Length: 376
Image (cartoon, rainbow, N blue to C red; front, top):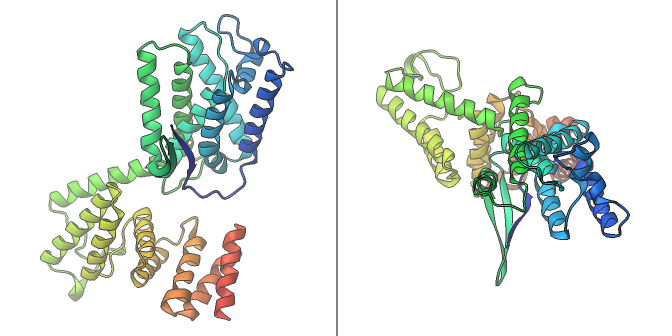
């Protein structure tokens, strides 16, 4: 048995709507077991559907395992989706995803359906669009119990592929087309919200990653055609001019190192990417990677306890990407490094004082106060 228990995406707010949905599903199941709720009255029958059925069937379950499986996936993926969409929008999205899943099921099936699977699939599809690079912790339980992490993209695409194979194979007993309809609906809604900017963009979302990939491909094509991005007096963080301009050999070496760093990051090999980045900044201290890549590299250097290099990477990030949405969190991390590992109390105090007014998470506020207390 293998099942997910959490993701590594940190929540900014308590997901009260998702918690309430889990509670309502559980209460309704208990009431159906006791006979207080007539399942036949609210389940979705494609041969005679009513609007109330498209909502009601989402809260009904045929067995305890059916309920537990759906609620577990809803807890793991729904918390973060609510955190990004907001409470009212998330509730509307959840219910609409269930309606679309029910419509999808009714296209080719006349068998009654019940369960939150379609709604949960919509949430999972949206999670794929919003947080493709997050990791999911999975627990396995066979002869012994253990856990491991897997990229959420791999897990979700595996689930989608499995449902697609079962649907094409004509396997019965489960509304696989409802699942697939939910996945498509959730993913499409997530991507449309990002594309239209009705939902604020983040460095980790799928649309941003696709745009970065396109830019990297364009950059490589330009460099192959002879374009030298480090020549002349450009205004970017890596530009040099005049007598300090690098030679052609240095330019080529810098370009190769940047490409290797990006390739390592794309393969999720953070250890190798960090080593290449260190070599890159030793070659040219002015080098700064793209926003998310620079932050990932700084985090990796900190995790591996290369605090002086991590501090330099964070400083480059702060000076280059001043409009980053979580700027204060980076300042807090850097202050922690300075006060506990590098003995730069004055700079640490400056960073904490700058970050404090913009901190909202109680744990971050507590950490900031602890840093100030350590500084005396």
